[in-house]
Amino acid sequence: MSWRRGAQMTQQRRPWPRWLRRGVLENAATLVIAAGVLMLLQPVSMTLYSYSFVTTLAGVAMFTIVSKFPE
Image (tube, rainbow, N blue to C red; front, top):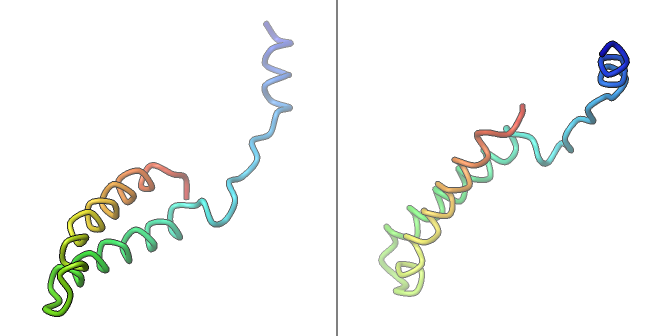
């Protein structure tokens, strides 16, 4: 059994790329949510209003998934 422990200890985990870390992607998800809310509140374009819910929902789903990533 000791040879297995030695093999596990020699394997090093590579860090995630900087753009895949939690802080960066949480900020991006927050911007997507904010864009969806602004699209919902604007009085000019019906197309933007139509896509506001989908945009907000995508931002919330992204935030939920990204919050599980390592820092």
